[in-house]
Length: 426
Ligand SMILES: [Zn+2]
Image (cartoon, rainbow, N blue to C red; front, top):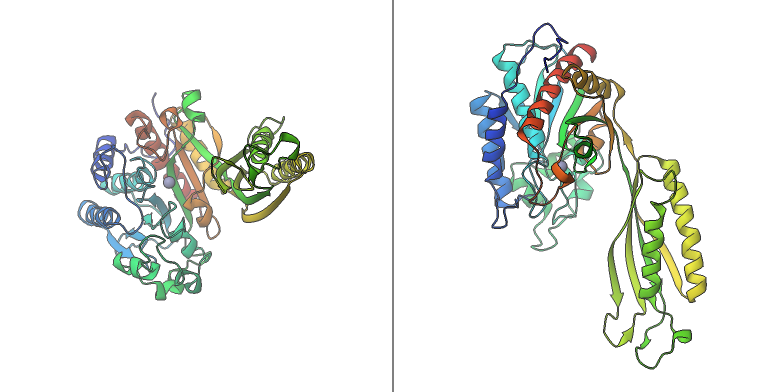
């Protein structure tokens, strides 16, 4: 389909170059299973940083700045524009045995958009900067979206100096200094709310809405809230052979009912866009000839609608009380995380949708049910996300895949969205 001209000039991104860079970056940390191991502060993380810095310096002529938490920033030296920058980017780290698109696509698409604009001598009103954030994925330092938590002031020096690698014992401070940052300078890394005009992140959807509809792109309206509880179920350990049914207070059998009650939340009408999961169970004493005495569960509940979350938790409480009463056991619930949903900026959603429509795509809007750096960036600037189709919805695994044609469309939409935002943002 012919693109509608939404700006005076139409600039075509170079999708072959973008794919080539994706494949190059995917070689760094590639394991025997075909997955990618590029977790925070590992040799692969360091190698990816080196590769990216080289690419930004050599291919784009950018000045690369490593901030105190080791986020990588690619900037044009002495950009003449008088406005605040528009920032594009994502992260280059992966989960263990992760895929080649999560994060990397956002960083390299930002790179491609920037390079295309440079090659066409496009003068923007805002300087366009690219960024790759530090430690977005959960890692052995037990902190995710590390780079943007620091930028947005959610983590301070006092928090950071306490963090250690749970396997090696290395301090986060030492790890960050190996990456070229300096935790003691973190206050200087914090971004003021008026320092950036806007932030845009492209990411694979990591779900299958777009794939099932056979659509390419969507603008993200909101990043889900994440609520976690530890649920402790206390029954009574006793002999597996001699304890008859009426005397049993089996914590694991009760836990099984709790799991089903949690799953039932998603079956209620009006609760289709809520995700509720019991992801972990630890049973005591966990032995074949003893009735389980205690079971500890983790509940992960996600929705972009705080009203629905409240409803879901009330329904769960009702169900849990019934299970506890019928089985004569105690169930204790302890809040572990209550991260509010984060709406994306309406002007960025609109620019992505307009750019999608101009490229012959639907104006699809989606909620992100995964957390992203954009949620932290939204605390300090107008932030938005462009989702691109994931084949079969796979993510955080080696099967993660997005077709080149979809990537090319998304890159074009992103470039056009940047041109729109350059005019529309202050
Ligand atoms: Zn990601």
